[in-house]
Length: 551
Image (tube, rainbow, N blue to C red; front, side, top):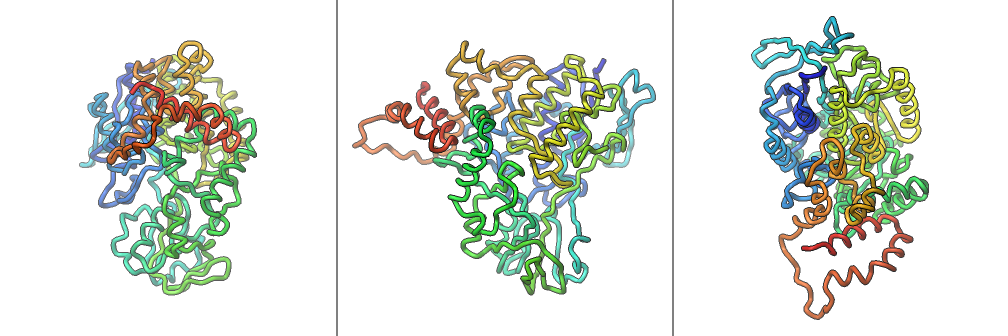
């Protein structure tokens, strides 16, 4: 029976895994190679090889309610899209509230994880660690949770860029980027249009002579700011939106792309990709269109070759006197401490059942948590994975046979490759709410909306038509949290609170209150809104419910 668990890594996935172990009464030790928690979200003045890294200006793409820990809502005063320092603050508050730090051994690197000789009967693992002073120890654990992420090994494919060895300027991977210091007045080419490439191009363009952003495939660009100035990821992300999208997927995709092109024409701006909106994670950037229209950033196709200080592109164009090239070309994922048999692939992805469990293990005592991508925050995905993994460890939930898991894994891989633009650099993408629900079903915490409508209609309406926030998975079942209902009903209050730094008074001539306005428009306007654009529906319903609630 599993009692002792090793958690590798103390980033967001590691913290939620520690918490899941504590909730299940498991004895655990978390090994963290650095001297602090935070993982990706802890900014480092100097890059540390083998660890994740971010630049100084990083703002999280997901809003705070969508990336919240499911039983620990973020403070209302924090901004909706937090700076990395505020994300780290939120993580510290979480760790302190649930006394997680006492379980972490800092400055301890995991060197290897291997099965014990009697693994077939015990399911145990030997975990070898190394301290900063070089001292090695071997520990035996009943189970292991791997939470090391996948932004640690920069992918720098120089062989794909002929002539790079002759380039007279400076080049580096985006992993090394901190800020725009030293790039004033330079001519810069940024290669790659992921979120890092877009952010870095925009930031450098404020000081550089010119920035050229090179992309092979283009990208759909979305803003953090949505309709009426609300966080964009709170709109169109409800369970009702999901149901409508499944009924009319082509229409949903067409409406989304039409709305994005209404903001600015992606083809005109040189950004339009070949894939549809849902096929790949979009580029989240509030400033790129403004930098393009002002000429500070120029879009370019893929780089063909380098020659001296010139960069040649596949369309025949050339940029001369380039000073700096930033390769925002993604990362290679690697788990060097794991046995090679556990790093086998199915397509581009690791061979993991539901992206968590290696199906070939005779004992399901190793789980990978946080190695996942979806159109939404990773935190709720990782937390649900950890909750499921610890239930499996304790024998409270069982896995199917190896044969069944392999068949499901292969089927899911085929579907994933058909629906999404997967590559070596982007090996995984899941449908956000369906994936969460599939794991929640295993844990026993999936919301029963019909039952909620009978018991608590007000809450049910929020769960169905409001943004699918993580608190929904604490309403019932194992790990139920008494504050989940209140967290859902007050989530819009926490969204609005950061905006109240200057409250604009209502005009005296307006006789009706905000409540009466919402009630008047509720019927016909809701219908018109829905017919015009389904993404208005969720936001209006949620705000209407909030405005009707007691203040």
